[in-house]
Amino acid sequence: MNGFGMRVLGFARTSPFGNRIPNPESRIPSRRRVRETIVFLGVALCAAQVAHAQLRRPRAEISPLVESTTVRAGNSVRVALQVTLPEGLHTQSNKPRDPTLIPTVLTVDVPAGITWDEVVFPPAIDLEQAGQDKPLAVFEREFLIGVRLTLAPNVAQGALDVPAHLRYQACDANLCYAPVTADVKWTLNVVAASAPLAPNPEATKLFDRIAFGRGEKPDASGTAAPEETAPRPSDATTDLAKLDNFTVLGSTGGYLGAADFLTFIRNAENGVQDKGMFEGRGPIAILLLVFLGGLALNLTPCVLPMIPINLAIIGAGTQSGIGNAPASRWRGFLLGATYGGAMALVYGILGLVVVLTAGTFGSINSTAWFNAGIAILFVVLALAMFDVIEIDFSRYSSGMFRGRQSGTFILAFGMGAIAALLAGACVGPVVIQVVLFASNLYATGTTSALALPFCLGIGMALPWPIAGAGLAKLPKPGMWMVRVKQAFGVFILATAAYYGYEAYSIMSNRWVDASAVTSSVEEQLKTGWHANLGEGLDLARREQKPVLIDMWATWCKNCLTMDKTTLKNEDVKAALDKYVRIKFQAEDPDQPPAKPVMQRFNAVGLPAYVILKPKT
Image 1 (cartoon, rainbow, N blue to C red):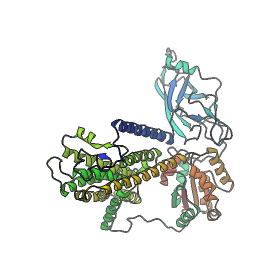
Image 2: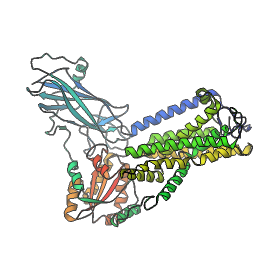
Image 3: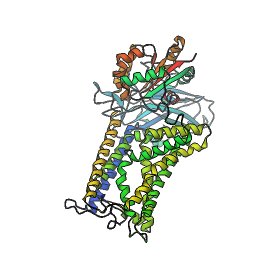
Image 4: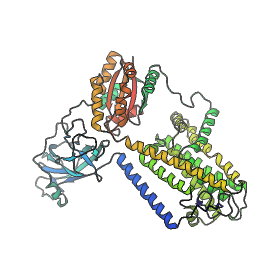
């Protein structure tokens, strides 16, 4: 058991990090207690995963059903969608009581030779939701949507696919989530008009629960939805083409106070853009900045609390009694180099993948489940610092590796890789700048740019060989080590509190009344804002006025906050008076029309703001 509350490869007696300091107030916990702690940690992490699934738009299981395994040409056929949501969730009905809420919409891409005659939605039930004056009209957690199709006599025999799209918004007793569009299809096995039918016994009972003959006739576009009561964006393809006639002056996102928003407007109008960290610098200066940035990654909140654990592992490995190796700085240097080398390798590979795939470095850090999981992990590590629990690395390494010497190096390599993964989640400005700079260079054909993430990793690895060599000459153990350990414990607990608060903040950002957001937008529309992107762009081009596009959604809490605070500020209103102001509803960022518009402006979240100027 080492001074940091961990057993490291069984070398506790000879290591200054391994000698246990007598402490009458501390007690070594039983293995049963450790197992219970591990079980608790596993349950908590599973709960975090469940919370993650809830926050990232709960998705229903949707099964397409056909009443018979064969369908005759010239006849009608009944098909259905069986929808099942996670426990405790419902979807808005096809006709919500509040017309500003998001209805369930079914769209069928009817192929040639088939007509869509009827759609049957289930009856709605009431859902009491916190903050709502009246209950929501929702569907049960499990429900069926029936559809009647008619085949023309000349439809070709064989398999015929009928694609459909179901757009729904899941709600529970506390909040409604971002809407989801699910793509499904029915496959009809068309046979001759004289061929016998083969009923589908598994689906027969389900079809009996659908009130066919009492449904609604879909509109000519193949959509079964209530009449639109609010203005909707125009055709996405047309709007994107109109954007070609404008120049982007600036963009930003998230909540901004009035002063920051005014600065954003002034910078856009004056052509002021934030310069990248590497712009105008030579190759040596760029490499030095990248190297120093990597060095600073050791101080990120994800990596810093791991330092005492890693020092304990490296420090124990520098001592005598490990194989035939004497205590030496050289061995400590090699262990530190192994740890740092793993950091450089894994971090470089992460950066390489991001550059080659145009992905997002560290996007996982913006999810509640990650922050909650890290908070729980750091609480457990802090308990180890206070000797409340014991984390026994030797139990696992001795079973995995034959020799203690090799086990120490492999464990150091593994911990270095873990630290690099954690650093990849904790994104700092230097990481974003390096990845963007490397991506831009690589796009111009400069393949050497792929080495920049590895340089970042090397900078991150630099201190560890030095630290490993220094651990061999530490002062003798004493009460000072207990105090250092406890100080690390306090710091790790503070870090856990930070990540717990981050998880809560991300989760609470979804606690918003959709009708309140919609009402706020409607108030803005009455003051001269435009709800239609295409119409607003046409007006701006005719009058040669600048444009402000405000991208929002009913599930976006900060969108409501911006409307109620910053956009109501008198100075902001005066600055925007000469602008054509457009409220663009990006309800589902993963689907058109929101997706192509957000991609065009590199908007990764909501609210997002873009300032445009008509081209002359």
